[in-house]
Image 1 (cartoon, helix red, strand yellow):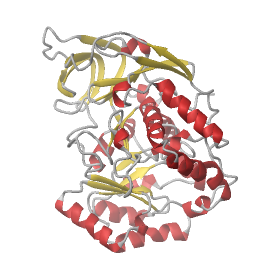
Image 2: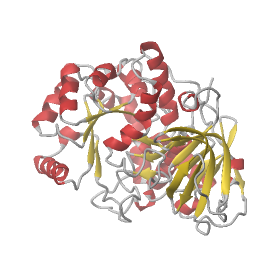
Image 3: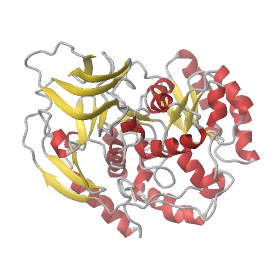
Length: 459
């Protein structure tokens, strides 16, 4: 069973006003540096961004003379895509089981789970803290390199607009991505944590949507465990007619070679979360068999209570696992956090790669020397230099944020002894980081618990 690294002290909050012009007024800029593009690495490249999209990219693309060129000394990657998370839970501290269990139903029935996780989460939501929890978690995701996420704060039948606050920050592919329309809770991607509890009428609606194309993708949590009950879920999944293109399975720890062959033959994807699997069940999905069967695999962190704080943290777990087994090449690991999840989510024409016409979602990581992929596969906690969504810089080091024409009212937070600047108030209704953080700390303290750290720092 893997052990979590020592967590850093709670973030130290500061406020810095940079007083620059508005981002809306500056519709174009260019990024100059080492670019990891859809066609390979460009060591000294330039990427022109206009109205939130990549207009051109290459060794020497034409840059209009009035467009500012922002030079970066790190490595520019596509924004990472997290298809498996439970975002509002990520305000809660880590939870370590006394010993691994056989399936998810066992730990969900533990009194400790109710006391440490489900009880506080439910109380916080009931008290109206959902938006603060979501925003904190999205900043956590951005700090981990994710510009798109799944597992967002959703509506209820009695409160269909309670999650209007989800607009902005990271792209919420299951609630509001900004890729299709301005309407919230109408995304062509659906996320189901308990798919076997779906009624027959809803199951038929899902099958019809996948058949017509109105539903591009659906994510099912399935086979989460190592016993016969977890394995049997795949048979029930097939009986419901869900073995079809557009469907993706999260976890799949109980699945075996024949299951993966059936998945591949029917265009079903797999989302792998190794750290949480090891923490809860002492084993993870047989991704070697899944790869051999040609299943498309994405990597995601699950949630921070038993998984990783973010995508970069989960990458370190996967890279360490892979160095012992040599299942994936470095290029394949990159695909598992960029192009593969984009394909599985049905958005590969919009995000997941740096190419002309794609949305300007990208991150900059420190240059660690050697092949550029080293900077992704070996990134240290909280080392990210910049995270940009739709052309807007939302998080980065203060010196990087100052490079952009338009970042203002910047909040600065210290994480793992590193200062990170946040350009978020346009997406939080004007709330500062200090306000969001303070409200959460007060509410969680009243429940006898604490606010989780933004990142688990290196030992």
